[in-house]
Image (tube, rainbow, N blue to C red; front, side, top):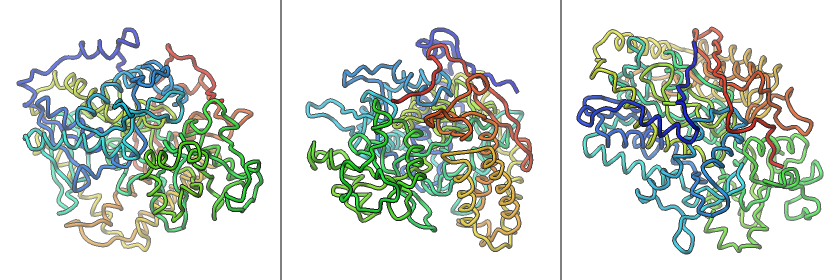
Length: 637
C-alpha cells in the first residue's frame, strides 16, 4: 500500500490556506442532507461535533460516559500553547513550528506541524469568545507561562484546570447544538465495530452500556476522536475508562496504525505506592516553572530532605541542561529521573522518586504567589500523599501519560479507510516521537474547530447523500461479528479476572517497552504477551450476561484489545532500530546517554497493517522530508 499524505504544494506558510481554497465545498443547503458520526466528546470530539452541526451537518455524537463533561480532556492541567507572542519574548508561528518538530525529535510531518502552529492563535481567540477563564495579568491581558522544550512563554492556562475549562467551553458549544437539534447525543455507548461498505466507512455498531443492546448507526462519514492508548501500561495518568478499542476496531477494518511505539512517559507524576494500585496521578508540567528537581548526591541517602544541605543536593537537570534547566522536554526529563533512581539516588520508600522542590520559589516570590499559581495542584498532592508541598518537596516519578502514535491519517486527517477521519490523540499526525507539554489541547481543538470542518466537506462534496443504510449486509455482518465476540467472552469459565490480565500486561510493556528498550527485552516481551493472550482465552473469569450493565464484559473487551494492540506496539519498537524521542533503545545512544537517531534509515512514519489476530502485522512506510528545518542531534544544553 502506497501511503499518500496528500500534502498540498506551495510554500509552507501558504499550504493550508491554499488547500482550503482548492478543496471542494458543500452547499449550505446540502449540508443538512449529510449525516456524520462523531465518536468521543473530549476536546477534539466535542469541538468537531459543535462546529460541524453549526455548519449544518446532521451529527450523531457518542460517548462512553453519562455526560460529555466526563471526557478525559477534563484532566489536562497545565495549559495550551499558542504563538501569540504576548510576552514579546521572541515567539512566532515559525518558532512554535520549530520547537514542535525538534521536540518530536524530527519524526513528524512539517506541513501538519506548521498548520498546527498557524491555527494555535485562532484557538485562543475562539476560547476567549466562549468565556474560558484564562489567567490574566494585573492589567487584564492574558497571562502566559513556560513549558518544557521551549525558551519562550507561550502557554495559556486556567490555573491547574485548563483542560476542564476548555472542555466546558466546547461542551457549551456542543450543548447549544444538541438543544438546536443539530447534534443527537448518545451517552453510555461504546463503539464495538466500524462498518465498512464498498471500501468506505459507512457507520458503526455500538453497544449500549446500560441495556447491553447492540445498536446500528449509518452515516456518510465517521469521525473518530476516542483518545490514546496509554492504559496499555495499566498504571497511567489516564482515566480508567480510556481504551484502545475503537482504534483497534478501525485497525482491523483496514486503518493503519502509525508509530504505536511512540508513547509519552510524563516526568512529574505521583509515584506508585502499592502493588494493587490501579491509577496514577499527574502533577502538571507547569510545576517545573518554579519547582527544582533534585536528588541526593550520595546513593542510598535516606535522610529527610530538610536534613540534606544544599551542597549535597544534585540538581541534575539544571546541571546537565543549563539552557533549559528543569524545562527540558518530557522524554529527556523522564529518562534522567530513571537514570538517577537506577543509580541508587532515588528517594521515598521505594527509591523510585525524585524531589520537586518549591522552597526557593516560595522564598523568592512568597507563598501567596505560588498558591495562586498552583493552589489546586498542591491541594491534590497533599490529599493523596498527606505531605504539605509548601513545606516538603514533592516526590515525583515518570508514568505513562500520552500516545503520540495513533491511526495513520493524511493531511486531511483521513485514515486509510476512506470516510474515516481521526482527530486528536487518536491520530499520529503532529507530535512525532515526543509531544511537548501543552500541545495536546492545542492539537485537539485545532483538529475539531478548524481542520475537520474544511476537510470533511472536501470529502463529502463528491459523495451521494445517504449512501449507506442500516439494513445493508455490511451492517448485518458487523453486528453478527460483535455478537459472536461477546458470546465467546461470556462463555469463558476461567479463574483470572480482567484486571489481573491487564495488570500483568502492564508490567510486561512497562518493563520492556517503556522508558528504556532493548532488542532482547522486546523479543521477550512479545513472547510473554503471546502467552498472556493464550491464557486470557483459556482462563478468563466472566460473570453476568450480555443484557444490562456488565462492567466485567466491558473490561474484557477492552483488555482483549489492549493485549492485541501491545503486540503491534512491540513490533513497531523492535523494527525501529534507532533511538528517537520517547523511543529509547539502549543500543542506540550517544556518549552522554541521549537518543541517537538514524535519519538515513528511519526518518519515516511506520504504519502497521492488520493481517489477522494471530499474524504479525505488516509495516508500510511514509518517508518524512525536511525542507524548512535542519536535521540535527537534539540538544537542550
